[in-house]
Image (cartoon, rainbow, N blue to C red):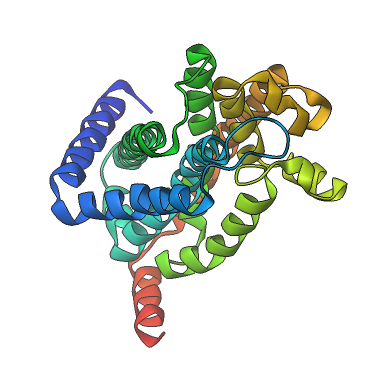
Length: 278
């Protein structure tokens, strides 16, 4: 990655984001698919409380949906976009351009970061307007958890996008695990409601730590009664997300270079024929 590739990637990612914002279909999909579903969930759960914590279910749902938005954009939306570009031959063409692949991946990452930012604002806005949630009580924690949580999943999303056979396969392979993690990682209901073995497994994934850090930013200490160890464990949140970030940064470049080197016209043709046959 050199300065020129980085600059081109940043500019490409920002332009693609502006294109998505101006596209009515994409905008409506974001509003309906993200905010619409979230608003319906808020109306469905009502104004009940989470156990005896005094925290409303709307607040818990808002924070959980925010964490899952970061996680799913990095580990599902990004891989599907990269897999689509592989299937269409974009990566094969970029391989012939000096710095083309680094600039492309930078652009994709910027677009995803912008999407996460927009959706996060919409979710928090809907929660404030409809769910009766209070503003974050710790803005600093909110900012660093959002940033570190995003960086923790974007490199891994790029790796997955380069490894899956195509966008349809990506959706099929990633959809069910995403739903399972959403249920078991404490973002939709307190993780302490789960069996102890599930609690330990959930802590192996970044979604749990993203959700815990965001709950620390939004929720009162009364919610600690429903948390593991009765603590926000912010140093552990930072350590876990930083570990995932470093692992992704170390793993992604080598795997991406290997996959792009193996791209060829014949492989592309085979994948297209297989996609048509299915």
